[in-house]
Length: 81
Image (tube, rainbow, N blue to C red):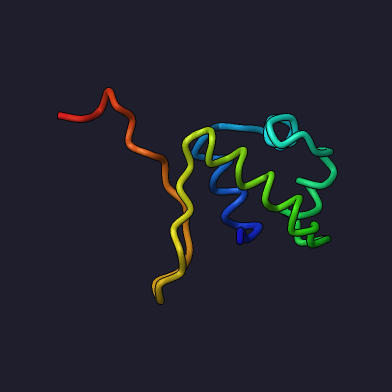
């Protein structure tokens, strides 16, 4: 689904604070803070809305594929040759 490290990296790519992610996902900032810090594992439905908010903002989640999971930004239309 999404690891705490992927969540932190995705926010960094977007230059989002934990509060901005919480607002976009319509969840509490404490939920984001605890998940990213490894203090708790949110419900699957909460992880789904967090990930959806990040994806809507342009983040792509890269599967493990033996090389390690990651995140990247979608290519913007203005950067095409």
